[in-house]
Amino acid sequence: MCDEVSAAGLVCVRFHEPDLRGALTAAALEPAARRFVSHLPRALSASLPVVKGGET
Image (cartoon, rainbow, N blue to C red; front, side):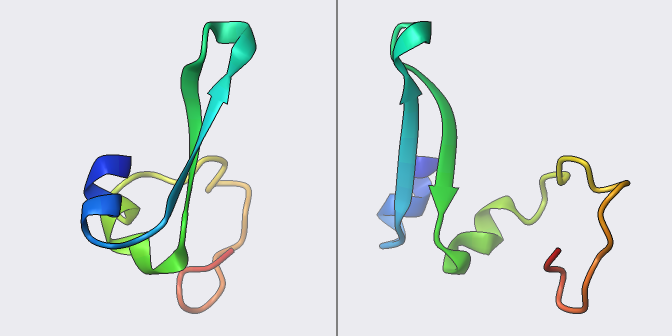
């Protein structure tokens, strides 16, 4: 995913866990990259209210 986002000229910051032998555990994307993740389910979405525009 980060490779696709970066190829589109957008920012993707990768987080690697030293305790897990450098495994990629998270990525932060700029808001313009929303189209790359909009199809994914949101974590805890059942417990968070949805605000107009899809932001929580």
